Length: 239
Image (tube, rainbow, N blue to C red; front, top):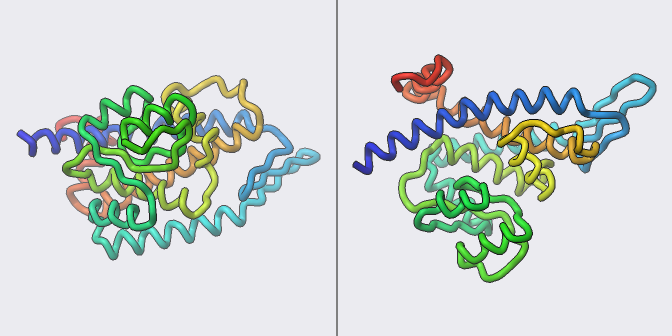
């Protein structure tokens, strides 16, 4: 029974990846249409002047390539083992919380299992109580999940985001992540965002897209994973 359940959940997560990639593309297109002149953020700077666009993102691109290289080396050294990756995360000081019914508990604050970035307000208070982290209206990034089998591709996706956050890639600040979750659930309403918010959202989408692409590439490197994802691209039938 448990084996059947885990197989079904792994397939379900892969289907989620497929549809998330579609949402990511749609959101990226909308963001590109809404971005306006005179914008910048901490490491990616976009400057528009006299109809000319100059993107000064050398620092972000350099950091992104370094992060990807380091992650690929870690994945190789750990043989893509999700438990070793999680142990590495914990060794670097990030809290790991394994709790019963984590999926249902997180659903109440519209979060998914895995990396939970900084939360504030009621969501932070709720999470701190449920993870026995004391009482706080602001939480640090942590991993929250059920105890049991961990899907390797899902862990790679989450590990990429965690490592990027730890190494200062943009898109993980509280506002950007809040906007990302909101607009991935219901793309639209970008007209109400100011330029800094749109840029932050753009970076958050980029990080998640990079994480998804890495999970895909690792899956495709293995014949079983490749067959599963090929079927997903055909509509996900009969996996």
